Length: 598
Image (cartoon, rainbow, N blue to C red; front, side, top):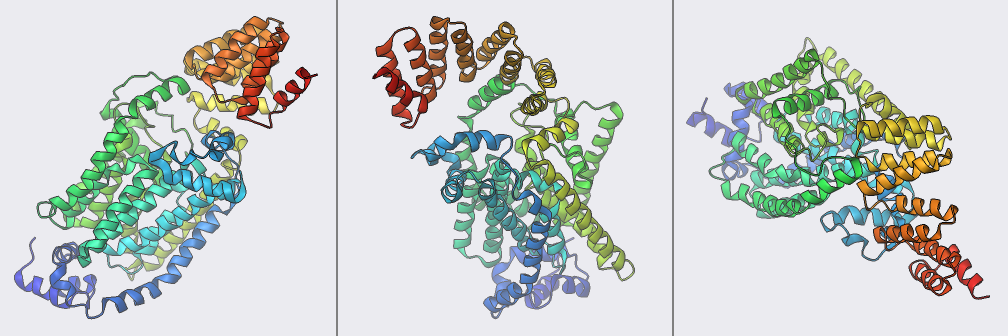
């Protein structure tokens, strides 16, 4: 359907004095066509706005109670997760990385993620290794993300309460937890917030035709990329918007400016693919080569699982690994996926805003659906940004009840019940993130086929002193992934504590073969030889540990102790001095130098 000349003139004359909904009812024009005409003819329409600044000010005043209420929803749902411990990747990136955070070049170790490094540095400078200070950034970005959702929705619908409904789901839905409570997952909240800022500024540019908004939008897009490379698909979202509401042909240069940024960033990412494969190979026992996934299995499994999590997020886990489906289970996921694509197809004619936002959901997940196995098939954090599309589509459906005189009460009841249910589920899930013990027990129940699950459960039992169950879990991890170096190393630690020294040494050697950077294995082998008074062997393996980690002061101190036992006192002094050069407070080195100087 196309607008007639008289319809176009009416819109240009009466918008925005009259709302889109009013014009639609009065002239019998679909709301999508009105919005499309407004977006494509901003110069003609904006002249009708006598005092836009006053209008904006009034709108901001109206919105303040809703924005405050959204913050309260976030606080209620996430308070019990604010003071959780460092868990999973947090331990390695922060807790065991304090010396690197203190180093002068910390900000430039990962240049493409410099803003995240800056956040960690600020948190550390304020309160040291206090988890809440590191997590505070996630909370701030999540609030910003929810607010931006609230501000963007009015560009796609003039329904008064729809922005609050959509933003409420974004605030408390359990699919969002991983990017808020988990410190390391905060990069997705950071990237999501920055990208929505970029999109909002782009919409401002389209409606007001002020070039500075376009420049700010591109800058915000670059900032988003420093959080996560997965937002590299943003140009496709801009293209989707123009395809749906504007004109790709008329705005190809505009769209191209975003593609230029993505192209440059993509070249940077390409240089890190080999590094990513090597990381997977040495840390998780994966094959250090591309493996092609079957898209006819991958796509229904992914989208079907995300839709299940959206409808009711029961199966929340850090490792979404349970993809061994029966034919009936796979058929169910396939039907869900086909239903999603069917709604997208139909909504292109029925409701272009729903079409846009459901397509938005699909596009944001494309980087994680690469066929090369470079990422998880499904991860809750991956859907942080795109989930807005699901919230919007469902909220539009719910709003039909709310604006109906007959079913209005039912609509509000459903909305209230969902808010309560999702908030409770979020609070319960936050308990799992309180500490590593809670997290790995919960993960063990939800992801029993992932080797990392059993490796982490082994750590849990080891901390409790339950060596038998620890050995059982590490062995299971090796069974699931025979090339998993950490599991070999950890099982060796347990066997050594149980007195099975020879078996432990074999496993340490195997762990070091699988991951030559695993200096702890070399050091533990050296320790075994030292206890046997085989100082030559202890020296050799300590040197291998130093090759793997040449800036570790304790390794030099250990080597010095071996030299002293071998009666190589001059070399011992040199090694102690090297340890003190790296760490002037190293107790082993200070005591050793003192003893040798007598």
